[in-house]
Length: 614
Image 1: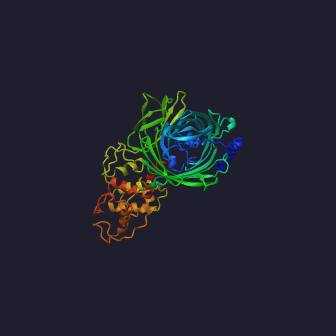
Image 2 (image 1 turned 135 degrees about the horizontal axis):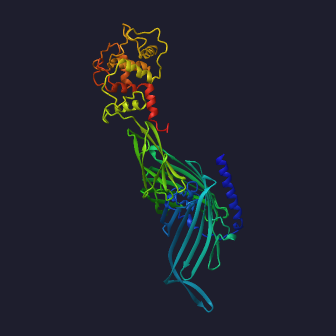
Image 3 (image 1 turned 120 degrees about the vertical axis):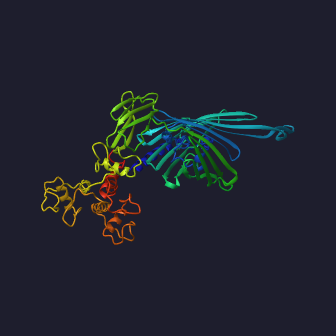
Protein backbone atom coordinates (compact mmCIF):
# COMPACT_ATOMS: atom_id res chain seq x y z
CA UNK A 1 0.00 0.00 0.00
CA UNK A 2 2.87 2.39 0.80
CA UNK A 3 4.53 1.76 -2.58
CA UNK A 4 1.20 2.25 -4.37
CA UNK A 5 0.73 5.60 -2.60
CA UNK A 6 4.24 6.64 -3.60
CA UNK A 7 3.61 5.74 -7.24
CA UNK A 8 0.47 7.89 -7.21
CA UNK A 9 2.55 10.82 -5.95
CA UNK A 10 5.11 10.27 -8.71
CA UNK A 11 2.44 10.03 -11.41
CA UNK A 12 0.78 13.21 -10.15
CA UNK A 13 4.08 15.11 -10.20
CA UNK A 14 4.92 13.78 -13.66
CA UNK A 15 1.51 14.76 -15.03
CA UNK A 16 1.85 18.26 -13.63
CA UNK A 17 5.29 18.63 -15.19
CA UNK A 18 3.95 17.61 -18.59
CA UNK A 19 1.08 20.09 -18.31
CA UNK A 20 3.22 23.09 -17.42
CA UNK A 21 5.69 22.37 -20.21
CA UNK A 22 2.98 22.12 -22.83
CA UNK A 23 3.55 25.62 -24.09
CA UNK A 24 7.15 24.78 -24.97
CA UNK A 25 6.47 21.65 -27.01
CA UNK A 26 6.59 23.68 -30.19
CA UNK A 27 10.02 25.13 -29.40
CA UNK A 28 12.77 24.03 -31.75
CA UNK A 29 15.79 25.89 -30.35
CA UNK A 30 17.46 24.13 -27.43
CA UNK A 31 20.60 24.93 -25.49
CA UNK A 32 22.64 22.51 -23.43
CA UNK A 33 22.27 22.03 -19.67
CA UNK A 34 25.73 22.10 -18.16
CA UNK A 35 24.52 20.20 -15.07
CA UNK A 36 23.89 17.18 -17.26
CA UNK A 37 27.54 16.14 -16.94
CA UNK A 38 28.97 18.10 -14.01
CA UNK A 39 27.31 15.87 -11.42
CA UNK A 40 30.32 14.31 -9.71
CA UNK A 41 32.49 11.33 -10.61
CA UNK A 42 30.65 8.86 -8.37
CA UNK A 43 27.30 8.83 -10.26
CA UNK A 44 29.12 9.06 -13.60
CA UNK A 45 30.92 5.83 -12.73
CA UNK A 46 27.53 4.15 -12.18
CA UNK A 47 26.09 5.09 -15.56
CA UNK A 48 24.65 8.26 -14.00
CA UNK A 49 22.19 6.09 -12.09
CA UNK A 50 21.21 8.35 -9.20
CA UNK A 51 17.54 9.41 -9.37
CA UNK A 52 16.57 6.47 -7.18
CA UNK A 53 19.68 6.60 -4.96
CA UNK A 54 20.62 10.24 -4.24
CA UNK A 55 22.56 9.55 -1.06
CA UNK A 56 25.25 12.23 -1.27
CA UNK A 57 25.77 15.80 -2.52
CA UNK A 58 25.41 14.75 -6.18
CA UNK A 59 21.68 14.62 -5.40
CA UNK A 60 21.69 18.40 -5.94
CA UNK A 61 21.97 17.69 -9.69
CA UNK A 62 20.30 14.31 -10.13
CA UNK A 63 17.46 14.44 -7.58
CA UNK A 64 17.37 17.36 -5.14
CA UNK A 65 14.86 15.41 -3.04
CA UNK A 66 17.81 13.38 -1.77
CA UNK A 67 19.50 16.38 -0.18
CA UNK A 68 17.16 16.13 2.82
CA UNK A 69 19.04 13.06 4.07
CA UNK A 70 22.42 14.83 4.00
CA UNK A 71 22.65 15.66 7.68
CA UNK A 72 26.21 17.04 7.76
CA UNK A 73 28.16 19.72 5.94
CA UNK A 74 29.49 18.54 2.55
CA UNK A 75 31.71 19.83 -0.25
CA UNK A 76 32.10 18.28 -3.70
CA UNK A 77 34.43 19.20 -6.54
CA UNK A 78 34.83 17.66 -9.98
CA UNK A 79 36.97 18.18 -13.05
CA UNK A 80 37.22 16.49 -16.42
CA UNK A 81 37.72 17.12 -20.11
CA UNK A 82 34.68 15.98 -22.04
CA UNK A 83 35.76 14.06 -25.18
CA UNK A 84 39.19 15.65 -24.71
CA UNK A 85 37.82 19.01 -25.81
CA UNK A 86 35.56 20.76 -23.27
CA UNK A 87 36.87 21.41 -19.76
CA UNK A 88 34.29 20.76 -17.04
CA UNK A 89 34.63 21.77 -13.40
CA UNK A 90 32.21 21.66 -10.47
CA UNK A 91 32.15 23.00 -6.93
CA UNK A 92 29.17 22.32 -4.67
CA UNK A 93 28.33 22.44 -0.97
CA UNK A 94 25.38 21.67 1.27
CA UNK A 95 24.59 22.36 4.90
CA UNK A 96 21.69 21.15 7.08
CA UNK A 97 19.54 23.80 8.71
CA UNK A 98 17.11 23.52 11.57
CA UNK A 99 14.59 22.26 9.06
CA UNK A 100 15.75 21.00 5.70
CA UNK A 101 19.04 21.18 3.81
CA UNK A 102 20.39 24.00 1.62
CA UNK A 103 22.80 23.39 -1.25
CA UNK A 104 24.72 25.72 -3.55
CA UNK A 105 26.84 24.86 -6.56
CA UNK A 106 28.85 26.31 -9.40
CA UNK A 107 29.43 24.51 -12.69
CA UNK A 108 31.67 25.77 -15.42
CA UNK A 109 32.71 24.60 -18.87
CA UNK A 110 34.82 26.19 -21.52
CA UNK A 111 36.82 25.65 -24.64
CA UNK A 112 38.96 27.70 -26.98
CA UNK A 113 39.67 27.29 -30.67
CA UNK A 114 41.10 29.21 -33.62
CA UNK A 115 39.94 29.57 -37.23
CA UNK A 116 41.42 31.32 -40.26
CA UNK A 117 40.47 34.97 -40.52
CA UNK A 118 37.89 35.69 -43.20
CA UNK A 119 38.80 38.32 -45.79
CA UNK A 120 36.26 40.00 -48.07
CA UNK A 121 37.93 40.15 -51.52
CA UNK A 122 36.54 41.94 -54.58
CA UNK A 123 37.22 39.57 -57.43
CA UNK A 124 35.40 41.67 -60.05
CA UNK A 125 33.64 44.95 -60.19
CA UNK A 126 30.82 44.73 -57.66
CA UNK A 127 31.53 41.04 -57.11
CA UNK A 128 32.91 39.92 -53.72
CA UNK A 129 33.98 36.61 -52.24
CA UNK A 130 34.89 35.62 -48.66
CA UNK A 131 38.27 33.91 -48.65
CA UNK A 132 39.91 32.36 -45.53
CA UNK A 133 43.28 33.88 -44.76
CA UNK A 134 46.34 31.68 -44.99
CA UNK A 135 48.35 33.84 -42.59
CA UNK A 136 45.90 35.27 -40.08
CA UNK A 137 43.72 33.48 -37.51
CA UNK A 138 40.92 34.49 -35.16
CA UNK A 139 40.69 32.96 -31.67
CA UNK A 140 37.32 32.13 -30.16
CA UNK A 141 36.44 31.27 -26.56
CA UNK A 142 33.23 29.72 -25.33
CA UNK A 143 32.22 29.71 -21.68
CA UNK A 144 29.19 28.27 -19.92
CA UNK A 145 28.43 28.69 -16.21
CA UNK A 146 25.60 27.58 -13.95
CA UNK A 147 24.87 28.70 -10.40
CA UNK A 148 22.55 26.37 -8.49
CA UNK A 149 20.56 27.03 -5.32
CA UNK A 150 18.81 23.98 -3.87
CA UNK A 151 16.57 23.24 -0.90
CA UNK A 152 15.23 19.92 0.34
CA UNK A 153 13.26 18.64 3.32
CA UNK A 154 11.12 15.71 4.38
CA UNK A 155 7.51 15.84 3.27
CA UNK A 156 4.64 14.55 5.46
CA UNK A 157 6.71 11.59 6.71
CA UNK A 158 10.41 10.98 7.52
CA UNK A 159 10.95 8.54 4.63
CA UNK A 160 9.58 10.91 1.96
CA UNK A 161 11.50 14.02 0.91
CA UNK A 162 11.08 16.76 -1.68
CA UNK A 163 13.65 19.09 -3.19
CA UNK A 164 14.02 21.92 -5.67
CA UNK A 165 17.05 23.35 -7.47
CA UNK A 166 16.96 26.79 -9.08
CA UNK A 167 19.63 27.13 -11.79
CA UNK A 168 20.97 30.37 -13.25
CA UNK A 169 22.72 30.03 -16.62
CA UNK A 170 25.32 32.31 -18.18
CA UNK A 171 26.97 31.76 -21.57
CA UNK A 172 29.40 33.83 -23.61
CA UNK A 173 31.22 33.62 -26.91
CA UNK A 174 34.11 35.91 -27.75
CA UNK A 175 36.22 36.22 -30.86
CA UNK A 176 35.72 38.52 -33.83
CA UNK A 177 32.49 39.47 -32.07
CA UNK A 178 31.05 38.92 -28.60
CA UNK A 179 27.70 37.56 -27.43
CA UNK A 180 26.32 36.82 -23.96
CA UNK A 181 23.31 34.92 -22.67
CA UNK A 182 21.47 34.59 -19.36
CA UNK A 183 18.60 32.47 -18.14
CA UNK A 184 17.28 30.22 -15.43
CA UNK A 185 15.31 27.03 -14.91
CA UNK A 186 14.15 24.71 -12.15
CA UNK A 187 14.63 21.07 -11.15
CA UNK A 188 12.20 19.22 -8.85
CA UNK A 189 12.78 15.88 -7.17
CA UNK A 190 11.07 13.40 -4.84
CA UNK A 191 12.76 10.58 -2.91
CA UNK A 192 11.01 7.80 -0.99
CA UNK A 193 12.51 5.05 1.19
CA UNK A 194 9.80 2.42 1.83
CA UNK A 195 12.46 0.13 3.31
CA UNK A 196 15.99 0.76 4.65
CA UNK A 197 17.36 -1.20 1.68
CA UNK A 198 15.06 0.22 -1.01
CA UNK A 199 14.96 3.76 -2.40
CA UNK A 200 12.66 5.14 -5.12
CA UNK A 201 12.93 8.53 -6.79
CA UNK A 202 11.41 10.86 -9.38
CA UNK A 203 13.05 13.85 -11.05
CA UNK A 204 11.91 16.66 -13.30
CA UNK A 205 14.77 18.74 -14.77
CA UNK A 206 14.18 22.11 -16.39
CA UNK A 207 10.46 22.04 -15.66
CA UNK A 208 9.81 25.76 -16.16
CA UNK A 209 8.20 26.49 -19.54
CA UNK A 210 9.58 29.37 -21.57
CA UNK A 211 6.47 31.42 -20.79
CA UNK A 212 7.45 31.38 -17.11
CA UNK A 213 11.09 32.22 -17.76
CA UNK A 214 12.58 28.80 -18.33
CA UNK A 215 14.86 29.86 -21.16
CA UNK A 216 18.21 31.40 -22.06
CA UNK A 217 18.17 34.78 -23.84
CA UNK A 218 21.17 35.98 -25.85
CA UNK A 219 22.27 39.56 -26.28
CA UNK A 220 21.24 39.14 -29.93
CA UNK A 221 17.66 38.48 -28.69
CA UNK A 222 17.91 34.83 -29.68
CA UNK A 223 15.96 32.67 -27.22
CA UNK A 224 16.81 29.06 -26.42
CA UNK A 225 15.00 26.68 -24.09
CA UNK A 226 16.45 23.91 -21.99
CA UNK A 227 15.21 20.39 -22.74
CA UNK A 228 12.94 19.05 -20.03
CA UNK A 229 13.92 15.67 -18.57
CA UNK A 230 11.68 13.31 -16.58
CA UNK A 231 13.30 10.45 -14.74
CA UNK A 232 12.07 7.61 -12.52
CA UNK A 233 14.51 5.39 -10.65
CA UNK A 234 15.10 2.92 -7.88
CA UNK A 235 18.00 1.34 -6.05
CA UNK A 236 18.54 -1.60 -3.74
CA UNK A 237 21.30 -1.58 -1.15
CA UNK A 238 22.26 -4.45 1.10
CA UNK A 239 25.08 -5.57 3.34
CA UNK A 240 26.54 -8.78 1.91
CA UNK A 241 28.43 -9.39 5.16
CA UNK A 242 31.94 -10.55 4.23
CA UNK A 243 31.54 -9.27 0.68
CA UNK A 244 30.78 -5.74 1.85
CA UNK A 245 28.00 -3.31 0.90
CA UNK A 246 26.49 -3.61 -2.57
CA UNK A 247 24.11 -1.18 -4.33
CA UNK A 248 22.35 -1.76 -7.64
CA UNK A 249 19.91 0.55 -9.37
CA UNK A 250 18.45 1.88 -12.59
CA UNK A 251 16.78 5.07 -13.86
CA UNK A 252 14.51 5.59 -16.86
CA UNK A 253 14.79 9.00 -18.53
CA UNK A 254 12.53 10.70 -21.07
CA UNK A 255 12.65 14.14 -22.74
CA UNK A 256 8.99 14.98 -23.49
CA UNK A 257 9.69 18.41 -24.99
CA UNK A 258 11.91 17.09 -27.78
CA UNK A 259 10.32 15.39 -30.74
CA UNK A 260 11.38 11.90 -31.80
CA UNK A 261 13.56 11.37 -28.73
CA UNK A 262 14.00 7.95 -27.19
CA UNK A 263 13.73 6.80 -23.59
CA UNK A 264 17.10 6.20 -21.97
CA UNK A 265 18.23 3.83 -19.23
CA UNK A 266 20.95 4.55 -16.69
CA UNK A 267 21.96 1.45 -14.74
CA UNK A 268 24.80 0.88 -12.32
CA UNK A 269 26.29 -1.09 -9.47
CA UNK A 270 28.50 -0.01 -6.59
CA UNK A 271 30.51 -2.25 -4.27
CA UNK A 272 32.23 -1.25 -1.03
CA UNK A 273 34.25 -4.36 -0.03
CA UNK A 274 35.84 -2.35 2.78
CA UNK A 275 34.95 1.10 4.18
CA UNK A 276 38.03 2.63 2.53
CA UNK A 277 37.51 1.50 -1.07
CA UNK A 278 34.69 1.20 -3.61
CA UNK A 279 34.38 0.03 -7.19
CA UNK A 280 31.50 0.72 -9.55
CA UNK A 281 30.33 0.18 -13.13
CA UNK A 282 27.34 1.09 -15.24
CA UNK A 283 25.66 1.77 -18.57
CA UNK A 284 24.83 5.37 -19.49
CA UNK A 285 22.55 5.36 -22.53
CA UNK A 286 22.54 8.33 -24.90
CA UNK A 287 21.02 9.27 -28.26
CA UNK A 288 23.03 9.41 -31.49
CA UNK A 289 22.16 9.92 -35.14
CA UNK A 290 21.37 6.88 -37.21
CA UNK A 291 23.07 6.55 -40.58
CA UNK A 292 23.02 9.83 -42.53
CA UNK A 293 19.38 10.77 -41.97
CA UNK A 294 17.53 12.41 -39.10
CA UNK A 295 16.61 9.17 -37.37
CA UNK A 296 17.93 8.55 -33.87
CA UNK A 297 19.07 5.49 -31.96
CA UNK A 298 20.42 4.75 -28.49
CA UNK A 299 24.01 3.92 -27.69
CA UNK A 300 25.21 2.13 -24.57
CA UNK A 301 28.10 4.00 -23.01
CA UNK A 302 30.10 1.87 -20.58
CA UNK A 303 31.22 3.56 -17.38
CA UNK A 304 33.27 2.53 -14.39
CA UNK A 305 34.88 4.08 -11.36
CA UNK A 306 36.58 3.71 -8.01
CA UNK A 307 36.61 5.57 -4.70
CA UNK A 308 39.16 5.95 -1.95
CA UNK A 309 37.85 7.18 1.40
CA UNK A 310 40.17 8.51 4.08
CA UNK A 311 38.59 9.94 7.22
CA UNK A 312 36.02 12.54 6.07
CA UNK A 313 37.47 12.85 2.55
CA UNK A 314 36.61 10.79 -0.53
CA UNK A 315 38.37 10.72 -3.88
CA UNK A 316 36.33 9.46 -6.85
CA UNK A 317 37.54 8.54 -10.31
CA UNK A 318 35.18 7.77 -13.20
CA UNK A 319 35.81 6.47 -16.69
CA UNK A 320 33.18 7.18 -19.36
CA UNK A 321 33.18 5.97 -22.96
CA UNK A 322 31.12 7.98 -25.46
CA UNK A 323 29.57 6.44 -28.57
CA UNK A 324 32.11 3.59 -28.69
CA UNK A 325 34.78 6.01 -29.89
CA UNK A 326 38.08 5.49 -28.11
CA UNK A 327 39.15 9.06 -28.76
CA UNK A 328 36.12 10.24 -26.79
CA UNK A 329 37.04 8.33 -23.62
CA UNK A 330 36.85 10.73 -20.69
CA UNK A 331 38.08 10.56 -17.11
CA UNK A 332 36.38 12.55 -14.37
CA UNK A 333 37.90 13.29 -10.97
CA UNK A 334 36.07 14.30 -7.81
CA UNK A 335 37.23 15.22 -4.34
CA UNK A 336 34.58 15.38 -1.66
CA UNK A 337 34.42 16.20 2.02
CA UNK A 338 31.65 15.05 4.32
CA UNK A 339 31.88 16.22 7.91
CA UNK A 340 31.47 13.60 10.58
CA UNK A 341 27.98 13.64 11.96
CA UNK A 342 27.58 15.88 14.97
CA UNK A 343 26.69 13.71 17.95
CA UNK A 344 24.61 15.80 20.39
CA UNK A 345 25.48 13.64 23.38
CA UNK A 346 28.28 11.11 23.77
CA UNK A 347 28.76 8.87 26.80
CA UNK A 348 32.46 8.13 27.17
CA UNK A 349 32.11 5.77 30.12
CA UNK A 350 30.86 3.33 31.12
CA UNK A 351 30.54 1.31 27.95
CA UNK A 352 27.14 -0.11 27.12
CA UNK A 353 26.78 -3.76 28.21
CA UNK A 354 29.37 -3.32 30.95
CA UNK A 355 29.89 -6.19 33.42
CA UNK A 356 31.36 -5.07 36.73
CA UNK A 357 31.69 -5.98 40.42
CA UNK A 358 31.67 -2.39 41.62
CA UNK A 359 28.75 -0.99 43.61
CA UNK A 360 28.99 2.36 41.79
CA UNK A 361 30.00 3.48 38.32
CA UNK A 362 31.21 6.86 37.13
CA UNK A 363 29.22 8.16 34.15
CA UNK A 364 31.23 10.56 32.00
CA UNK A 365 30.47 12.15 28.66
CA UNK A 366 30.64 15.16 26.38
CA UNK A 367 28.05 17.43 24.78
CA UNK A 368 28.25 18.90 21.26
CA UNK A 369 24.69 20.20 20.85
CA UNK A 370 24.52 23.91 21.76
CA UNK A 371 20.98 23.62 23.14
CA UNK A 372 21.84 20.97 25.74
CA UNK A 373 22.16 22.85 29.03
CA UNK A 374 22.08 20.01 31.58
CA UNK A 375 22.24 16.23 31.83
CA UNK A 376 19.76 13.93 33.54
CA UNK A 377 21.20 10.59 34.66
CA UNK A 378 18.31 8.47 35.86
CA UNK A 379 16.87 10.76 38.56
CA UNK A 380 19.77 13.14 39.14
CA UNK A 381 20.48 16.38 37.26
CA UNK A 382 24.11 17.03 36.36
CA UNK A 383 25.58 20.31 35.14
CA UNK A 384 27.45 20.59 31.85
CA UNK A 385 30.85 22.20 32.32
CA UNK A 386 32.93 23.12 29.27
CA UNK A 387 31.07 20.58 27.19
CA UNK A 388 31.61 17.70 29.63
CA UNK A 389 29.75 16.04 32.49
CA UNK A 390 30.29 13.31 35.07
CA UNK A 391 28.36 11.74 37.93
CA UNK A 392 28.57 8.68 40.17
CA UNK A 393 25.68 6.24 39.90
CA UNK A 394 24.88 3.44 42.36
CA UNK A 395 24.34 -0.07 41.02
CA UNK A 396 22.09 -2.74 42.41
CA UNK A 397 23.03 -6.39 42.18
CA UNK A 398 22.11 -7.79 38.77
CA UNK A 399 20.81 -5.78 35.82
CA UNK A 400 20.91 -1.97 35.83
CA UNK A 401 19.57 0.51 33.28
CA UNK A 402 21.14 3.97 33.20
CA UNK A 403 19.39 6.63 31.11
CA UNK A 404 21.54 9.63 30.18
CA UNK A 405 19.50 12.48 28.68
CA UNK A 406 20.61 15.86 27.38
CA UNK A 407 18.08 18.53 28.39
CA UNK A 408 17.46 21.98 26.96
CA UNK A 409 16.82 25.01 29.14
CA UNK A 410 13.16 24.00 29.50
CA UNK A 411 14.02 20.49 30.62
CA UNK A 412 13.04 18.83 27.36
CA UNK A 413 15.19 15.88 26.30
CA UNK A 414 17.12 16.52 23.07
CA UNK A 415 19.05 13.25 23.05
CA UNK A 416 18.91 10.18 25.30
CA UNK A 417 21.36 7.32 25.61
CA UNK A 418 20.57 3.98 27.24
CA UNK A 419 23.33 2.14 29.09
CA UNK A 420 23.04 -1.45 30.26
CA UNK A 421 25.23 -2.46 33.19
CA UNK A 422 25.38 -5.87 34.85
CA UNK A 423 26.72 -5.93 38.40
CA UNK A 424 27.95 -9.31 39.60
CA UNK A 425 28.38 -10.17 43.26
CA UNK A 426 31.92 -9.74 44.53
CA UNK A 427 33.38 -11.93 47.26
CA UNK A 428 36.27 -10.71 49.38
CA UNK A 429 38.04 -14.07 49.36
CA UNK A 430 37.74 -14.72 45.60
CA UNK A 431 40.57 -12.89 43.80
CA UNK A 432 40.18 -11.68 40.22
CA UNK A 433 42.48 -14.41 38.90
CA UNK A 434 40.84 -17.27 40.79
CA UNK A 435 40.12 -20.17 38.44
CA UNK A 436 36.40 -20.46 39.32
CA UNK A 437 35.68 -16.74 39.84
CA UNK A 438 33.21 -16.43 36.95
CA UNK A 439 31.01 -19.32 38.06
CA UNK A 440 31.15 -18.22 41.71
CA UNK A 441 30.12 -14.63 40.92
CA UNK A 442 27.32 -15.71 38.58
CA UNK A 443 25.82 -18.12 41.12
CA UNK A 444 26.24 -15.54 43.86
CA UNK A 445 24.39 -12.93 41.79
CA UNK A 446 21.59 -15.41 41.06
CA UNK A 447 21.40 -16.17 44.81
CA UNK A 448 22.00 -19.87 44.12
CA UNK A 449 25.19 -19.87 46.20
CA UNK A 450 25.00 -16.45 47.91
CA UNK A 451 27.99 -16.94 50.18
CA UNK A 452 28.23 -15.83 53.78
CA UNK A 453 27.23 -12.71 55.68
CA UNK A 454 30.73 -11.24 55.70
CA UNK A 455 30.83 -11.17 51.86
CA UNK A 456 32.99 -14.26 51.65
CA UNK A 457 32.44 -17.42 49.63
CA UNK A 458 35.02 -19.77 51.17
CA UNK A 459 35.80 -21.38 47.82
CA UNK A 460 38.18 -24.02 49.22
CA UNK A 461 35.83 -25.08 51.99
CA UNK A 462 34.42 -28.60 51.77
CA UNK A 463 30.69 -29.13 51.44
CA UNK A 464 28.46 -31.56 53.33
CA UNK A 465 25.90 -33.85 51.76
CA UNK A 466 23.13 -31.84 53.43
CA UNK A 467 24.34 -28.51 52.02
CA UNK A 468 24.80 -30.02 48.54
CA UNK A 469 21.25 -31.37 48.51
CA UNK A 470 19.77 -28.08 49.71
CA UNK A 471 21.63 -26.27 46.89
CA UNK A 472 20.20 -28.67 44.30
CA UNK A 473 16.67 -28.31 45.64
CA UNK A 474 16.96 -24.50 45.59
CA UNK A 475 18.16 -24.55 41.99
CA UNK A 476 15.29 -26.82 40.96
CA UNK A 477 12.88 -24.69 43.02
CA UNK A 478 11.74 -27.85 44.78
CA UNK A 479 10.16 -26.98 48.15
CA UNK A 480 10.81 -29.01 51.31
CA UNK A 481 8.45 -31.96 51.71
CA UNK A 482 5.39 -31.42 53.89
CA UNK A 483 4.57 -35.10 54.30
CA UNK A 484 7.53 -36.95 55.80
CA UNK A 485 6.11 -40.44 56.19
CA UNK A 486 7.24 -42.94 55.21
CA UNK A 487 10.69 -41.50 55.89
CA UNK A 488 13.58 -43.22 54.05
CA UNK A 489 16.58 -42.48 56.28
CA UNK A 490 17.07 -43.82 59.79
CA UNK A 491 19.89 -41.42 60.76
CA UNK A 492 17.70 -38.32 60.41
CA UNK A 493 15.01 -37.56 62.95
CA UNK A 494 11.67 -36.29 61.70
CA UNK A 495 12.14 -33.27 63.97
CA UNK A 496 15.46 -32.29 62.36
CA UNK A 497 15.38 -29.10 60.24
CA UNK A 498 16.99 -31.04 57.41
CA UNK A 499 14.35 -33.80 57.39
CA UNK A 500 11.93 -32.08 54.91
CA UNK A 501 14.84 -31.49 52.48
CA UNK A 502 16.02 -35.10 52.73
CA UNK A 503 12.49 -36.37 52.03
CA UNK A 504 12.10 -33.97 49.05
CA UNK A 505 15.46 -35.10 47.60
CA UNK A 506 14.49 -38.73 47.98
CA UNK A 507 11.08 -38.16 46.34
CA UNK A 508 12.81 -36.39 43.42
CA UNK A 509 15.19 -39.38 43.12
CA UNK A 510 18.19 -37.14 43.62
CA UNK A 511 19.43 -39.18 46.58
CA UNK A 512 19.07 -42.86 47.39
CA UNK A 513 21.13 -43.09 50.56
CA UNK A 514 23.49 -45.82 51.61
CA UNK A 515 22.66 -49.55 51.75
CA UNK A 516 22.17 -49.30 55.52
CA UNK A 517 19.34 -46.77 54.92
CA UNK A 518 21.35 -43.82 56.19
CA UNK A 519 21.95 -40.49 54.48
CA UNK A 520 24.81 -39.18 56.60
CA UNK A 521 23.97 -35.46 56.11
CA UNK A 522 27.13 -34.15 57.79
CA UNK A 523 29.45 -36.33 55.75
CA UNK A 524 31.57 -34.40 53.28
CA UNK A 525 30.70 -34.90 49.62
CA UNK A 526 33.47 -36.36 47.50
CA UNK A 527 33.94 -35.75 43.78
CA UNK A 528 32.28 -39.02 42.79
CA UNK A 529 29.14 -38.39 44.84
CA UNK A 530 28.95 -34.79 43.71
CA UNK A 531 29.25 -35.81 40.07
CA UNK A 532 26.53 -38.45 40.31
CA UNK A 533 24.14 -36.04 42.06
CA UNK A 534 24.77 -33.30 39.46
CA UNK A 535 24.12 -35.69 36.54
CA UNK A 536 20.93 -37.01 38.18
CA UNK A 537 19.72 -33.50 38.88
CA UNK A 538 20.38 -32.47 35.27
CA UNK A 539 18.53 -35.54 33.96
CA UNK A 540 21.19 -36.00 31.31
CA UNK A 541 21.07 -39.08 29.13
CA UNK A 542 24.10 -41.13 30.11
CA UNK A 543 26.90 -40.99 27.56
CA UNK A 544 28.20 -43.97 25.66
CA UNK A 545 31.64 -44.86 26.97
CA UNK A 546 34.28 -45.30 24.26
CA UNK A 547 37.33 -44.75 26.44
CA UNK A 548 38.16 -44.15 30.05
CA UNK A 549 37.39 -40.52 30.98
CA UNK A 550 40.32 -40.30 33.41
CA UNK A 551 43.41 -42.37 34.10
CA UNK A 552 42.31 -43.44 37.59
CA UNK A 553 38.81 -44.55 36.47
CA UNK A 554 38.81 -48.15 35.31
CA UNK A 555 36.77 -49.32 32.37
CA UNK A 556 34.60 -51.35 34.76
CA UNK A 557 33.98 -48.54 37.27
CA UNK A 558 30.36 -48.67 38.39
CA UNK A 559 29.85 -44.89 37.75
CA UNK A 560 31.92 -44.53 34.58
CA UNK A 561 28.88 -43.45 32.54
CA UNK A 562 28.00 -40.69 35.00
CA UNK A 563 31.62 -39.49 35.10
CA UNK A 564 31.90 -39.55 31.29
CA UNK A 565 28.62 -37.64 30.94
CA UNK A 566 29.74 -34.98 33.41
CA UNK A 567 33.02 -34.55 31.57
CA UNK A 568 31.31 -34.18 28.19
CA UNK A 569 28.95 -31.55 29.69
CA UNK A 570 31.97 -29.50 30.92
CA UNK A 571 31.08 -30.07 34.58
CA UNK A 572 34.57 -31.31 35.44
CA UNK A 573 36.82 -28.60 33.98
CA UNK A 574 38.73 -28.53 37.25
CA UNK A 575 39.80 -32.18 36.80
CA UNK A 576 43.05 -32.92 34.94
CA UNK A 577 44.47 -36.41 34.22
CA UNK A 578 43.14 -38.07 37.38
CA UNK A 579 39.64 -37.79 38.74
CA UNK A 580 40.43 -38.59 42.37
CA UNK A 581 36.90 -39.83 43.11
CA UNK A 582 37.39 -39.90 46.91
CA UNK A 583 38.67 -36.34 47.09
CA UNK A 584 36.34 -34.00 48.94
CA UNK A 585 34.41 -31.58 46.72
CA UNK A 586 35.03 -27.89 47.37
CA UNK A 587 32.49 -25.09 47.17
CA UNK A 588 34.31 -23.68 44.13
CA UNK A 589 34.11 -27.03 42.34
CA UNK A 590 30.43 -27.29 43.22
CA UNK A 591 29.82 -23.81 41.75
CA UNK A 592 31.39 -24.90 38.45
CA UNK A 593 29.35 -28.12 38.38
CA UNK A 594 26.07 -26.34 39.14
CA UNK A 595 26.74 -23.68 36.48
CA UNK A 596 26.66 -26.42 33.83
CA UNK A 597 23.34 -27.93 34.89
CA UNK A 598 20.54 -27.04 32.43
CA UNK A 599 18.45 -25.07 34.91
CA UNK A 600 21.34 -22.96 36.16
CA UNK A 601 22.81 -22.56 32.66
CA UNK A 602 19.45 -21.16 31.50
CA UNK A 603 19.44 -18.63 34.34
CA UNK A 604 23.02 -17.62 33.57
CA UNK A 605 22.18 -17.19 29.89
CA UNK A 606 19.26 -14.92 30.77
CA UNK A 607 21.39 -12.96 33.21
CA UNK A 608 24.05 -12.35 30.55
CA UNK A 609 21.50 -11.46 27.86
CA UNK A 610 21.58 -7.68 27.49
CA UNK A 611 18.54 -7.66 25.21
CA UNK A 612 16.06 -8.52 27.96
CA UNK A 613 15.47 -7.18 31.45
CA UNK A 614 16.74 -3.63 30.86
